[in-house]
Image (cartoon, rainbow, N blue to C red; front, side, top):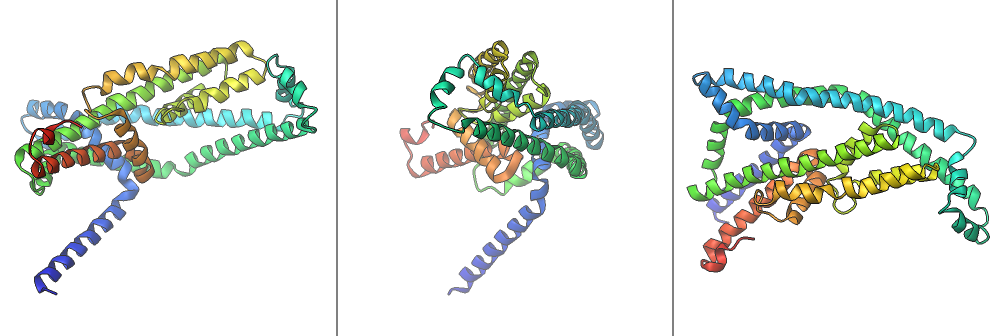
Length: 359
């Protein structure tokens, strides 16, 4: 084998090994680092103004912006986490009472319900022992839900130190993103073998997709979570803030989305005999929660990401599976960069009108 080729392969292999080790080191803190980068990119124009007002003093401007972001963004998140832990504890107590109950009032309400009773009368002769099975199912489901909430609450208590550590890393990283962001960006893109116009296109793509994800996906999910929590509060269900937050997360799931939360809540109300509130929650969930994203999301995404909703959804879900929570941001950006690189390849290899068509 040619010695030059062998040397090149060794250098390439060693480089890949180092990259893998670097990823292994930073992967436990990938979420706060990515979040710091996203916040820094989003707030960088404001940082530039502050730096100009402070006559170019980078450290002072970065410190000021870090404190402002910590107070405005991180503070409410910590408060919300505290409230969620309280609501989880209350929900645990509520489920524990239901699971330990001896009257199985849910089962009796099912048997007397105007919509369910006729079907039960027809099925009972065919399914002997249905009552026993139904009781066992209700108890099993309640105990499972109780265990889930208990593990969630215990996880919060066990992970307080880890949460605080990641919070500190986020704040420190944010300071350096503000102070050294321009320098890091220049150093990174100087190593990319593309002409200046292509590099500018890549930078614009990253900013555009991040903006679309933040203002399109996140804000839509937050609105859906708020609307869902309001519906739970009106219906008189326990822990509306907790379930609203869960709905905000479930809103990322295509098709079913928030229905994974509000539909069981509505069924629970119907089984308790609260037909009006159950029907209300079904209508509220389908119209005010489940359909609002179809109204809000196009305003945030259309013309901003320049990507189909399918690409963004696949990027988010695949990113979450691969990178955890930070994949919500990493996934769409990687797919967008891949598409732009493919356009560059197509334009270089197959020049002509077809090489410049938008995907």
